[in-house]
Each structure stands twice: as structure tokens, then as C-alpha cells.
Length: 216
Image 1 (spheres, rainbow, N blue to C red):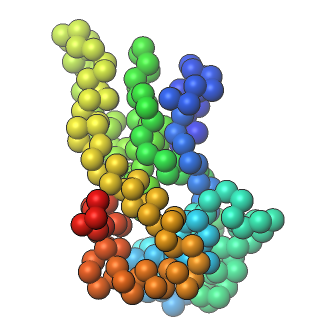
Image 2 (image 1 turned 60 degrees about the horizontal axis):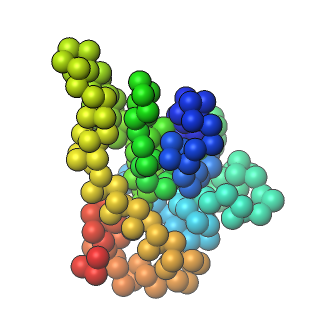
């Protein structure tokens, strides 16, 4: 998982094998007057992160991910509970976890240990998405292991496949997140940037892990 317990057991506190910028998240399954679209909320509602509503038929997944310490002494569950109450949602169940938002680890292979998915930091920092990368990296890991057993190919081929497949998108996504942290500091600044970037597709491109601006 995102805390990379296996990698840490093998390498202790070696930062090369540990996903960075861990963001605590919490989510709730809710029902109520739900939107028809996948909504993302930025600004004061989620300091240093974002909140989301993902409709799933009769229910929705409502979640919140913020940078550690940004909410002061307020608990994440309490904060999201207030958000759900404001949206007039009824909470059915709770869940949560950690998401690594600092990009890929520096090394995904050590001896016979391969880090995949969240353990390898394969999460798009600009939107928190990691399911696709987890599935793809698991397939690459299986291919590398089979090639190693059949032909003696080094397991390092796994990391090469991962970086060739998704390295560019992850780098762009990390830049987008850093730009967002720099410019989306509060509600007024967030609204101003949305008015600037929205019409030219900058926000949409950032969420899709594409270059949000021609500037970089």
C-alpha cells in the first residue's frame, strides 16, 4: 500500500524506497440529492488538497484529501461530516487511507522485491488517481518476473517498463500539483485562477495529467 511496508522492512528508512508527500484522506458513501457529474472542490473546503463527489447510481462517494496539518485540530471525519451536512447528504458508511502525492519512488526494484501501485508512488498527484497505474504496474511486474524466470532477464526491466509507460504523465501531473499549490491558496485566489484557466482548458488538462499551460 501507500505506506510501502514491504519496501520499508527491506530498506528501513531509505527515502528512495518510500513514497513521499503522503496525504490523509477520508470518504463516505452517501445518499441524497446527488449530482449527475463527478464534481471536484478546491480552495478552503480542502486546504492543500481537494474534495470530491463521485455519483454511483443511488449513492455517491464523497471524499476529502488535505495536506497534513492544514485543518489544525479539526478531525478529517468531523470536517467531511460538516461538508456532507452542508450538502444535505445522509452518510451510510465511512472509509479512509493515505495517498502518496509526491510522484514515483526513486527505485522500484531492490533484489527480488518489486514495488507496484501506491507502494511505488504511482499516483497522479494532480488528481489522486492510482487504480489504473496499480493494475498496469502489476501486469508489468508479472511480465518481468516471468521473463526473469524463463530467460534470466533482470527484474530491473520492470521499472523500465513503468517509467516508459507512465513516467511522462506522472511528471506532468506532479508539476500541475505544484502549480496548484502555489496559485490555489484560498477561495479568492482559486476563483481567480479558475476564471483564467477554465476558459482555456487549463484546469481540465491538469486533471487529465496533460500540460495545463503552454508555459511548461
